[in-house]
Length: 132
Length: 204
Image 1: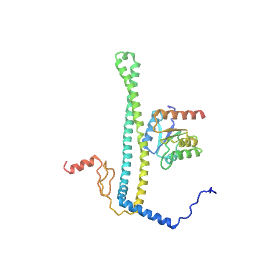
Image 2: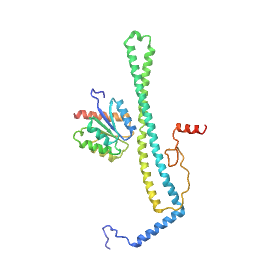
Image 3: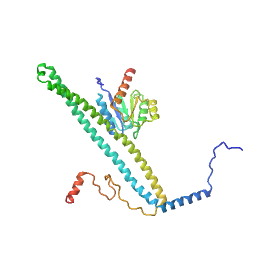
Image 4: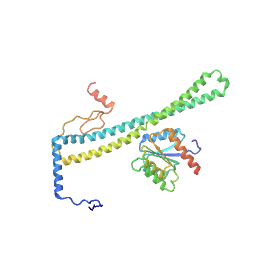
């Protein structure tokens, strides 16, 4: 992932530990342009004023959950194209189905490995490249 | 015999029913008092804020520990990357001048060994970083337990208010373990500097 124009990632999680882990893994994958938000509401505010190429979001968060953020992104014409990778400790079937139906680009269950995150991100980016 | 297909809709209860319920409640209250349950419940309700505080303490301390580990890993990775880059550059310089390469095969072997070890160390640092996700996972569980304790505390307090216990609660000592929050009237010494200062004031 060493494109001339680096992709801009937004990592959303209420736990700073998890934000740092995801940021560190993205950095190892060559993605150095990473911004953090502590919940869905903060992420939405950032999305209104900054351009991002990719969102990695937790689901269970205060103020605005990952599902609510996902729905808000998909409801906004200018943000609809943005891929959202859901990362959560909740592995309930209905949550996974809801995420897929709501337009999530992928779903990762915590704890996860570097290989899993890399594989999901690469797959989503490849899909985007084909669609474009 | 004709059977009624429709569910029975409960009508208003007769006054005798309320009277009987009142008697049962009174009997339950008296029995609880006789068994000495109310003081125990009262003590449990008093202990719950302490339990809640301890759980929050666990979440806070584990978060701090995870942050410290992540900071150390990030710094180590940064310095480690510098070593990898330097060893690669050294190998390239040695290879660029075959005349200088001849007397230094050990140098090349060393650089290759450093490169191999560096890759292995980097993987281990990544594993250490990923292992810190325990804070997120256990933190969510602790948050749910704290919410449950708050609910239990509310229910117990409501019960105690209604029961209006007359017996005094037995005097129990505080729970064992680290002191995590100052309670009214108690001075808490929770870091080494304060402990040393206190010991010094006592002549140690």
